[in-house]
Length: 141
Image (cartoon, rainbow, N blue to C red; front, side):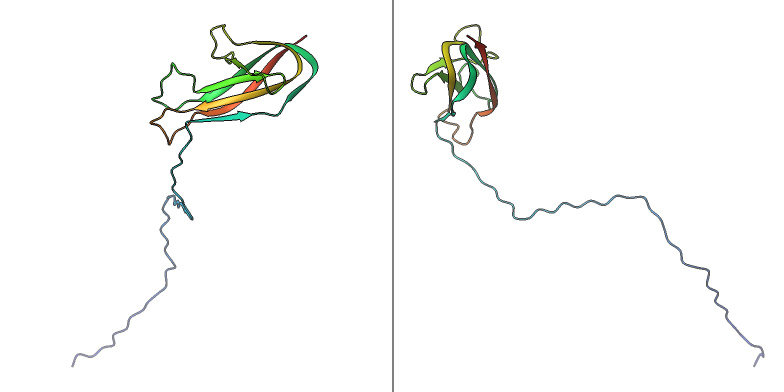
């Protein structure tokens, strides 16, 4: 009918890539376990003997504790006792909590044992005080 030749030409211009700034993050959790612990109303820790190279005339203690929020702040939930022989115990208040009373054990000994008593309220069976650390401070005889 009408004469003529129809042709199409395709030329390759190259690959186009969009570059987007972004961050990808992933968190994987495997073998997770949820549990609830029940603590005794009272428990104690007795250390091995702390041996000093010279006899001490006086010993005090410094401690770092973590008491759960909402507990009665007037009660001593973490108590300390010192003994030169491991049998006779004397209650002592850590220097960082004391008001200048019951914070020194006067003795003449090269060994000191520490007993720590942890207590919790009756209605808080799933909470406990945490003793982070303690240090003995001794004065040579």
